[in-house]
Structure formats: structure tokens, C-alpha cells
Length: 164
Image 1 (cartoon, rainbow, N blue to C red):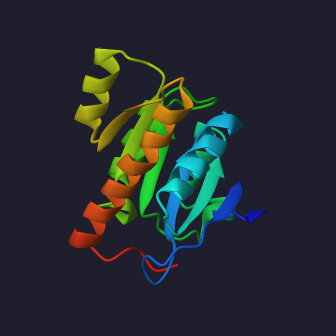
Image 2 (spheres, rainbow, N blue to C red):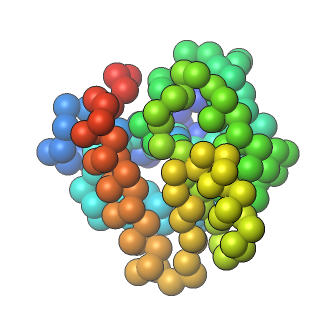
């Protein structure tokens, strides 16, 4: 089921027997097709998740700063940020995520079609947990779901997922 969420984007609920509540995944991405493929990749992993989609870096910073419609937003279990966003780029979004105390411990990953070693090194210094390459092939794209499932699983062993 796909519905409009009050916090700015598409909310996707996928049913599975894993865990007492869905993982809250925040995706900051201006390409709706990539979000659609991401949802399919996560569904293939049988994850129970709620996905919130923000379309630009300005919305992302409002979420990180808990401003406006995002003032009472739940703490995400995972944040996925596109590197090339309108309004504010992904690098600045990662910088702000890492300086937000209420987001300490939340895995923040960058995904991009860029293969630049400079981008990877720069984002690693900023504290991005993973740099995920957006492939052009469907099957390779579906592997992103496993990468994110592994990150969420590692987080569960360290900390209980945030309560919605």
C-alpha cells in the first residue's frame, strides 16, 4: 500500500514477519524512479519498512533540523541521501545529519551514479556509513536492498530500532 505521508513524501508499508514494527527509512532523492526501484529492492529482502521520501536538500535540512512539518517526525533507522540534489547538495545534507545530536547512531548512506574516488573519500570523512553506487541494470539495483538490510541488521544488534 502506498499513501501520502504528512512528512512530505511517499510512505510505503511492506508486510513481513521480521520484528515488532517497521523500520523507518528516510530517502532523500529527486528521482522518483530510483525510489520506486529502491522500494522493490527492499521488498525483495522481505523487510517490514516505512519509507519516507524527500525530494530535495532543502526538505532534508528541514527534516534534520526538525522544522515545520518535520517538527514531530520519528527518528529514522536509516537515511539514504542522493549526492546530487536540488537546492542543497547531498554532501551538505550528510554534514548536517552528522552534526544533529538526535540522529547520532543512525546509519547515513550516500547513493549516487558517480564513481568518483574524490566523492567517496570526501563523504567518508564526513561520516557517511556507506557509498552505494546506483547501477544501471535492474538486477544490480536489486542488490542495494541486501546492502541496506545488512546495515539495518547490524544496527539492530547494536541498538533497538527507534520507536515510531
